[in-house]
Length: 264
View 1 (cartoon, rainbow, N blue to C red):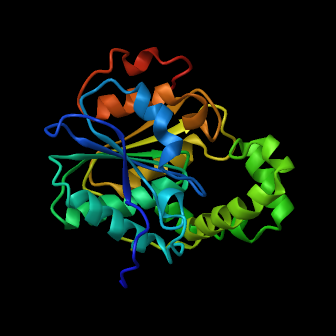
View 2 (view 1 turned 180 degrees about the horizontal axis):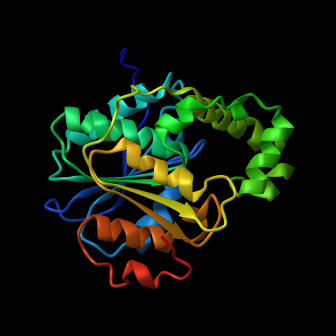
């Protein structure tokens, strides 16, 4: 892997915590940066440090070339996390970030870092993705915009900001392509428990899709549904905060069973 000079950090601190607690790392969806998870971090009550990820060409790294593939992303994220020597790591990925998170978990294990849990949100498993031919990244601009608005991933008000869309859409398209063309090792699994979480109103990812993550781990896999659509993490960040606090080993003061609309 050829090193590319960085214009900003890979990991961005979102919340302070105790060095003895598991490190929580949040991986964003297509076109987004670490800042999208600030509401989640602020809603957490546990002792963990929380760090978001900026992919190349995103956030504080916007001047860098976009990453060539998911393996590149996983390697640089795992290197950055391992350099912090955390006692354990909880990984949360949303949509495209779930695919990245799967490979980050494997890369961390290869570096001797224990992954306490991988939480994959609003996404089919990497193996299921690889078994399909998905071409959303090839859709014409107007179709891509309509899909994003319909799923809640793009504010309709941005349709009146053509200059901003001109900057955002290529990055979204690029990230979407990386997820759709990613081909993990067919035998690849993570040596950590997995929680697959979806929005109760999401029409794009089913219960069966989430259950497919069970084939990606040597440990347990649980399926959770929380209120909201595909972008539930942006609609109701407090629900993900509860999941993360629980995964990091501390009750957040609200058992999962009390989240309104939760089903399993």
